[in-house]
Length: 130
Image 1 (cartoon, rainbow, N blue to C red):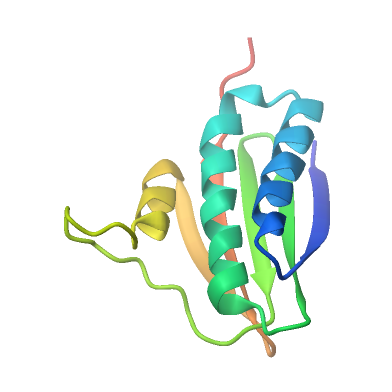
Image 2 (tube, rainbow, N blue to C red):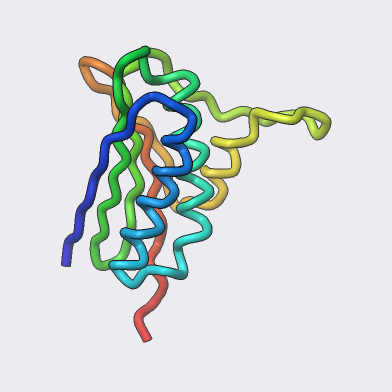
């Protein structure tokens, strides 16, 4: 079994909520609701980074989900330069925890570089079937 869905979003703050709604809808359709909370949080972080840092004005970013027998892969692709950096913020800092949290929730975390832009991805282990 291999499933895949992707959607493009414009570079604006409302796209972060729309990307959350997209992944929740897909995971619900795929009957993977035990993963909804973690993946919803992670897509919020990755989409926010794409909107704030990764997507040049006038461009879109893409959010994709792929499921295999064992894993679900969340991908956020943008056409911007630069690389995401996982930070270890001080306790008093109000920001900078997003990629750290996403990496802690996911089984794997990585970045694929493209001629134009990058894809930041996370994998999650599927819960055992009952």
